[in-house]
Amino acid sequence: DAKTTQPTSMDCAEGRAANLPCNHSTISGNEYVYWYRQIHSQGPQYIIHGLKNNETNEMASLIITEDRKSSTLILPHATLRDTAVYYCIVSRYSGGGADGLTFGKGTHLIIQP
Amino acid sequence: DTAVSQTPKYLVTQMGNDKSIKCEQNLGHDTMYWYKQDSKKFLKIMFSYNNKELIINETVPNRFSPKSPDKAHLNLHINSLELGDSAVYFCASSQGARQGGGNTIYFGEGSWLTVV
Image (cartoon, rainbow over all chains, first blue to last red; front, side, top):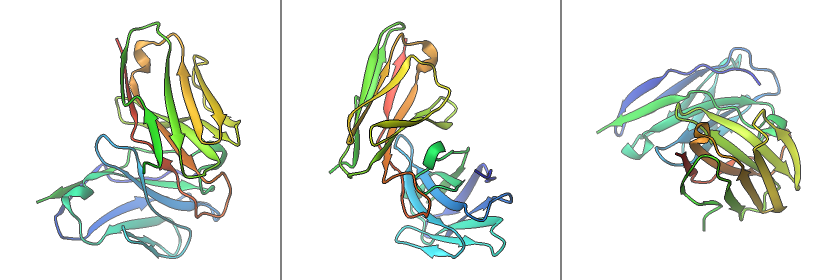
């Protein structure tokens, strides 16, 4: 699976949109981009995933560049409960497949009141 | 209803002991996993089971053994515990290892293991 690069930490004001970038310049054509988050002392939680097109669900939006070398996770109206470590993962298999999902260091997003 | 549940949540034990962590999922998934998160917060996969068959086995010590009595359960047995085994262990499940996207991995709340 391709490697991803994320900023170590980010701050965002409560109520504003949080935009979390992820670089995956070596992504292959059949690899998906997944986003998970881990709130302190909890298990990781799935947020969203995509292949080529932009995606939106009740939690967030995922914007993937046309060349697929980077993506941005958008939390439209961040709340204090969104403070967590956010992981961007690239994987060929939906559920992780033979290798499972490989988690990197992620971005620690801190929502400021 | 908790989708993926694991017990115990906290476990403190002495070096050399043998312990087990139990995991159950009520999602009807056919693949279950065990992940380990160490003190540096790195989350690494240890095992996955698909239809009661081990399909991956990371380079973990053979003191760790997953046991699956049925599709809904994947327990983790650890023999001869060492100080370095102290970590948070997460159980997880997914619909299956297949291409195409659309599946997600659901994690339990974690089991905090401390070896003293």
